[in-house]
Amino acid sequence: MTSSDTISDASSSPSSSSASTAATATKTSNYSTKERNCQTVRIPPIHRLAIDDIYHNSTDPDDKPDLDILKEHLLLEGRLTEQAALRIIETGAAILRDEDTMLTVTAPLTICGDIHGQLYDLFKLFDVGGSPATTSYLFLGDYVDRGYFGIECVLYLWALKIHYPDTFFLLRGNHECRHLTEYFTFKQECLVKYTEDIYDACMLAFDCLPIAALMNKQFLCVHGGISPEISTLDDIRQLDRFQEPPPYGALCDLLWSDPVQDYDSDKDNTSPIPQRRSSLPLDDLPPSLMTQPALPSPNEHLYLHNTTRGCSYFYTYAAVNEFLVRNEILSIIRAHEAQDVGYRMYRKSAETGFPSLITIFSAPNYLDAYHNKAAIMKYENNVLNIRQFNSSPHPYWLPNFMDVFSWSLPFVGEKVTGALLCILNICTDEELAEPDEQINSLIQRNNRELRKEQLRIKIRALAKIAKTYKTLREMSENILALRGLTPLLNPTELLNNPEVKTETDVAASILRDATISTEERFSTAKVFDQVNERMPPPKLSRSVTTPVTIERTKQSSISDSPLQSMSTRKDLSSKVLISGTTQGLVKMRRASFASSSVVQMNNTTTTVKSYSKLRK
Image 1 (cartoon, rainbow, N blue to C red):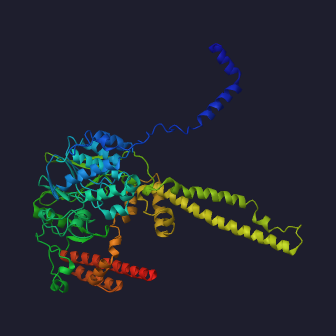
Image 2 (image 1 turned 180 degrees about the horizontal axis):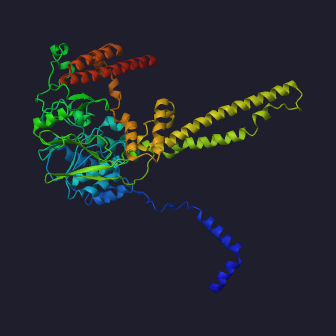
Image 3 (image 1 turned 120 degrees about the horizontal axis):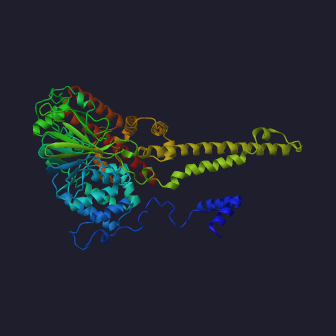
């Protein structure tokens, strides 16, 4: 048959053409169960990289991991064997352990803020800032939590530290601790992707991270800010960093403190008299300081309680300016706070005309909800440049590492109950109420009415179940809209918390609105996420409930009851706020934490006693 014959046959037989098209459509709609149907997304590696895959000479303890192989594998969501991951983490920790608590670094230097497990944005950061092989870097902490690739960030950053120990520097953030990683997502991520041994190794490595860095003897680089218990740079050098950060004190403040909200409009004295401040715990203070009101001093408005974080302090422009003058440095560079444009330059120092404080944030579109830009700071030849960049696409994870089956149950349940309701609603209420004329016996009529009433009860019960599943389905959809802003509750717990559920509904509806501006999205996300910026409540461990600990708690308790401890804190707070001194703030903060711990410990003691009685 010639080509003209083929055309003629096709045109003369439209039915055969349509049949062929239908057959083709039917054929293309069949999906293979053995091949990958979505060809545009590369399949994650099936095998885990072993030590021999990453190291060229695995028996050599000085050998370094292959960065190119590691990067390509992590980009494809590949994982490492536990032995390979432990080797990278422990080798990097050994290098960090030998560094000083406060590093001394020189320009040229690229300074980066929070990363928060955003691996693909971390690779974008290196594209913008330059290769670590030729560029010196200083990271200000917060490598994990809230994002979904925290362990990958740790592995790659630690591998870079192994390769470039003298030009690649890592500081500790407030999220590099056991308390926050257990409360947020990093521990869960390690358990999902690896084992608890990997998590424990990361925690030991985090304890080795330096706390601060002094760049060119001009800039103090730290994650959070300054502390009323830190007067000079030597005070930072003398800190014991190899520990879990406490909930108060100098180490806590360096990781948690923030500038006061009206920092730029502060009108206080710009050159206060430098003065050493006392930071003794409440129990170590002499009785004279406990009973007598403190005298007014120039420090009375330097620090305020940090109500946003629930710990540490807000520091004012006057406090920063005093610290800069006393230590003869130019500015403080910190991270710790999301910024809509990725950075913020604060009020300039009256002595130098240079910004007294600079905030850098390097996690673009933080939590997939903030819609913010990220920034890094490059300092070279006494010139400071800010480079901004936007977020990069990344593989999707359900919030809080929820599995798809748990997440989809409300959707399935809603459909199943809907189908059952349709079956039961074949007869309307009017039809059920109509009497059956063929039934003459009273007993038969009563039995008939009884069955009808039972059917009505089942329909009403099923309708309630359907309504519940609908609510759960709506909350699951809100979880998808909120992404990283999702409360740390599952949909069932969220259903039992009406206040959080209402806030979740409002925030999700706002974030779904495509007409609102980027600034409004950023503000909405920041307000809704404020609860997650606070230090989580202390988690009572098994060691807390041991008889020795309970006995010590009894002996050191300030009060016999929660009400008495609350009144003690209230009286102490009023006295300190009247005097308004920095020393008083330190006393009140420590007393507040001590009494709150005693209340929780006393409650724990009661619980343990009750449990022992039940056992008897």
